[in-house]
Length: 153
Image 1 (cartoon, rainbow, N blue to C red):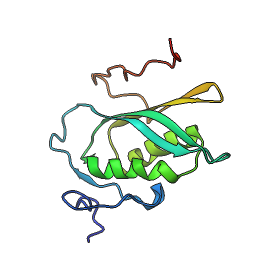
Image 2 (image 1 turned 90 degrees about the vertical axis):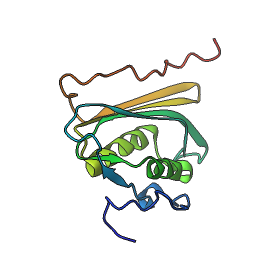
Image 3 (image 1 turned 180 degrees about the vertical axis):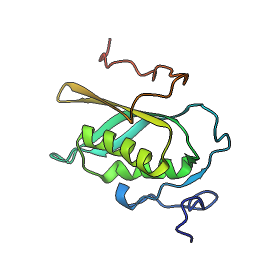
C-alpha cells in the first residue's frame, strides 16, 4: 500500500476497525469542486468513547461541517476513525477538539467546525464546539440541528 494520502487505503477494500484513533488513517481524495465555496456535513449521532476516569462509555452526537480546499475526507476512513474512539479514553473536550484539529491539520480545508453534543453523565450534558477560525464570507452555515439536551420532556 502507498503512504500517499491521495491513494485511499480503505475505499473499495475490507478494512478492520483501527485499535485506536492514533492508529487510524484518514484518507483524502481530490475535491471534485476545487475552487468552489461549499460546505460538507458529517453527522455521527451514535459516537462513543470512554471516560478516562471510570472507563464507562460516553455517548455523543457529533456534527462536522467544513468548506473543503483541495481535498475532501473519504467517508469510509472517517467512519473507521470515529469508530476507533470506541475503546479510547478521553474527556469530552479533548475528544471533540482533537477530532476537529486532526481533520483540519491533515485535510487543510478552507474552514472547519465540529459540535460535540454529549449525553448526560452524572446529570450534566456537555456540549463542546471548536472551529478553525472565522468562516469564509458567503459560506452558507446552517444550524447544526441538534437541540440542547432537555431530558424526557
